[in-house]
Length: 224
Image 1 (spheres, rainbow, N blue to C red):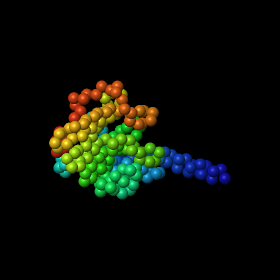
Image 2: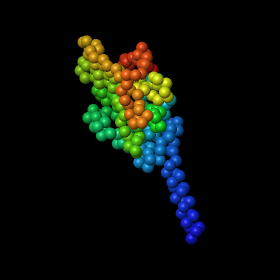
Image 3: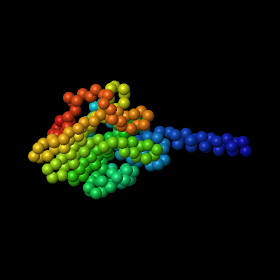
Image 4: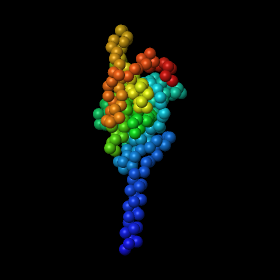
């Protein structure tokens, strides 16, 4: 009886250790948790290759030549991975007959942050997600290019550590432009990620090097 009890305890212990072990996913062995494995969220993570970045310009370039280097080109996401995205984004893709691409994963605060690209006939968009509590959570829209008629809306982001606290900050610039008048409206915002909530919070306290923050001009090679 004692041997049987010991055997059961050993079996339960081995199962417990396995459930808490990290799982290697992605092109360079980034880590997801057992919670992600149990919920199937690891299938979402495996679509992304981990990338080490220090100063990343996130922009949409729908005219990018297949032979040119475009870090956010990505690969088409599987139906299983797309099904894990928030409903409103899946509806946006369906309404615009657009396709989701998995691009890169970057390091956040004790987690990976996943960047997707939505490629549509009129609007292209790049979004950031995290896997939390076994679900894919949308954190921020990072870039878009939406052109209808003679008007275009554009937003670019820069991900970098402005204040050297080892956590990424987010710089965003957006503009509206028309063929007749050029840029008619422009705005810029700066965010930091709160270590407690792991949400992007707007701030005016960071000394941003604005001279290096520029829009990507579609069709140009400035960021390739």
